[in-house]
Length: 155
Image (cartoon, rainbow, N blue to C red; front, side):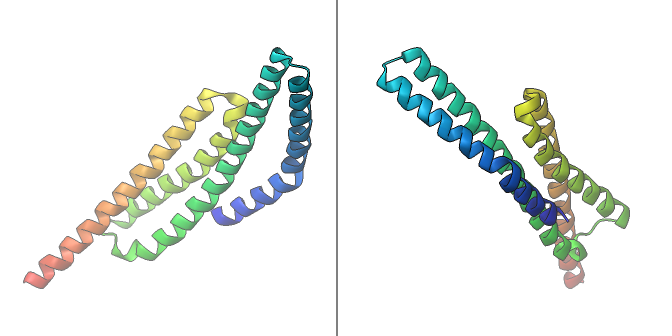
């Protein structure tokens, strides 16, 4: 589902956000060329600032798009190792919910970072921590499973 959401967001971004950004980029570069030819340093600085803001907005949109898809693929891979995670079903479910929660919140707040500011970036970081905690917990479950297999072979 996350992969599908990532593809849908990418299609929305391409259809409604990317082309207007390209028009703005052309306008900024045209303004930059005009200001440079007239040696207007303040105008050049303003155009460069505008271009930096546009680049940041584009980068955040692309990062949100790629994070959703990557977390979806990671969730798919995690589904294959679930039988080898030696945790109770309740804890497997808790860690999976934590993983999915972080996987949805991180890209969402990365996208909102340009609009909201550092608060959104902090929330995205916390969501990344949720994903990391869930992955570490599942890895511990895999280590517990291998220990269980090793101890069964020793008997």
